[in-house]
Amino acid sequence: MPLPKAELHLHIEGTLEPELAFELAARNGVRLPYADTGALRTAYRFEDLQSFLDLYYDLMAVLRTERDFADLANAYLARAAAQGVRHAEIFFDPQAHLARGVGMGTVVEGLWRALEHSERAHGVSTQLIMCFLRDESAESAMATLDAAEPYLDRITGVGLDSAEAGHPPVKFREVYEAAAALGLRRVAHAGEEGPPEYITEALDVLGVERVDHGLRCMEDPALVERLVRERIPLTLCPLSNVRLRAVDVLTEHPLPAMLDAGLLCTVNSDDPAYFGGYAGDNFDAVRAALGLDEERLRELARNSFVASFLEHDEERRAR
Ligand code: HPA
Ligand code: ZN
Image 1 (cartoon, helix red, strand yellow):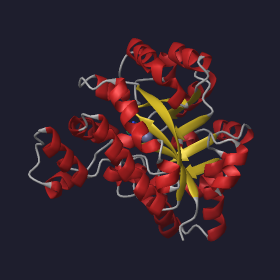
Image 2 (cartoon, protein in one colour):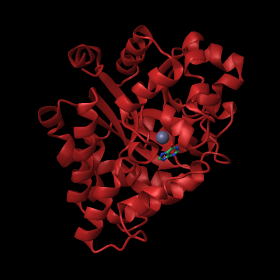
Image 3 (cartoon, helix red, strand yellow):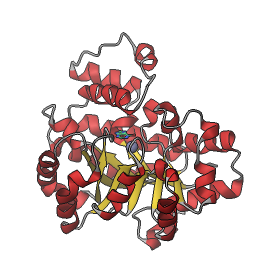
Image 4 (cartoon, rainbow, N blue to C red):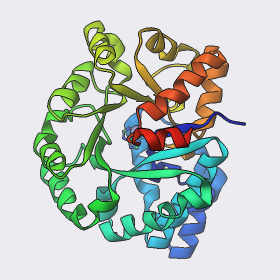
């Protein structure tokens, strides 16, 4: 029995497995520049975050209809459930779809078709977190928030993703203020490729309650102390860090040092179709590579519920 856990860092577009990509391509008459799923998989050799993002955005061309988004989410929820995920807080990237002429309604209504039945169908409760692309303008982010207005009853919070270096959190101050005024929860990717200062800025300027990745906090002892003191959760993604070369090899991942420092760490899959595994695979990988014992693994699973946006009575039921 896999440990019951919550997944808090998961890009739904990053769950697009090659087989489903080809199925959707055929259904929608989209030509993919790969002969077959094997050829596509061999392209999954990334140098850094940007080389991954290029492929990730390209492959989204196959996602066109509500049904496509529903199929994508259902496939993820089934796989996550099989690996012990009881609750998932799911990122989506509307700007990447709007730019291709796929509307906010298609994306949200499509995802919702899967999410609204998820507890019954998969035993997984869900929330949606809408991410802004940080390499797009602040105006585009604000327009995206406006476009989401009719769907806010289905959206728990906002996040910030895509190419980090050179795109500091402060760029999105106003849109995060507007999101907070709408009652949305706030998270942001910070300290994946960007410097520790971006983590501080995400906390102080954007008011985030949770930091996605946050790996590079380890370069700044005063920041680590603050994150511990304020109990700020970090959503780590160990297999992603290796594939995108944020760490050289899994055996050198700082997770054990981060736990020893008292940081509220969680383990997540980020883009599981691209990085070699889902939430449970990430747990198995850190257990094997870092020699984490059962108590540490249970701590990580417990942290995932503590760090979630579930209310506490819902949290107890999920465990
Ligand atoms: N980092 C930043 N942006 C992303 C990622 C990631 O790991 N995955 C999808 N968008
Ligand atoms: Zn991510």
